[in-house]
Image 1 (cartoon, rainbow, N blue to C red):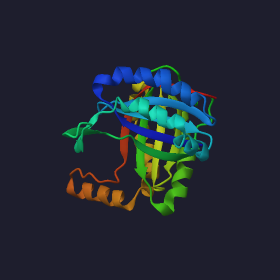
Image 2: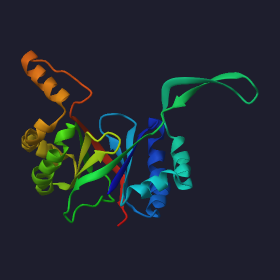
Image 3: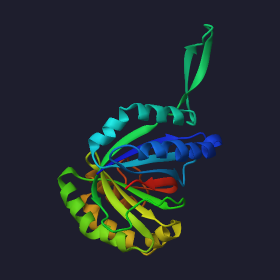
Image 4: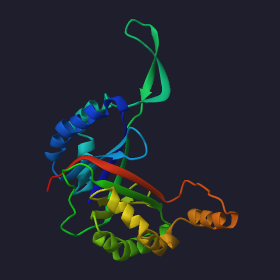
Length: 252
């Protein structure tokens, strides 16, 4: 299966209208597309105005065909009016040949992933109700340890997530352009269950099982932190982001 993520920066003044448009216009259009199994809009719990539109496809080609289609273009036009303005400005001539400055909109960022490991339980569908809590863990893996990492995730991490109270489903995705980057998604009934899982120490225990497969730069950084007793941030750190489901639907 194939996962497509579109990161959006939405003007906070228009968030409510944007949600309505996504629910009324975007979801019905996606539901009609061949191969689209699921679509949803999730909102960051930490960064204001930050959203991700995610779609799950049977095949990569189906998602690529959609990206090139008129449907994709029209939906992008619907969304564009809600995008927030960046700090960048452009200089241009107006229709009456006057010089004018206009802010540049923050363009959506698109990333494609292949689903490497996924849940097989009967709960693995995106609920159509709002409020579900999504936890995304991003890691960079050593190229020669990718196979080992996937195996441990499949045999150790996924079964623990599937049996954790309140966890609806989970899956591991691999970045198609950067094959050392992986995202682990877990979807929870609400935040309290994810917090309970974290506080139980289970997340730390499972991370320790795969930590040796993380990028060498990250492992070196961890050693340096222990010796210096200080916190060091790098581009290859394990990153945890939390989102809330605004609207979503499974199509089959």
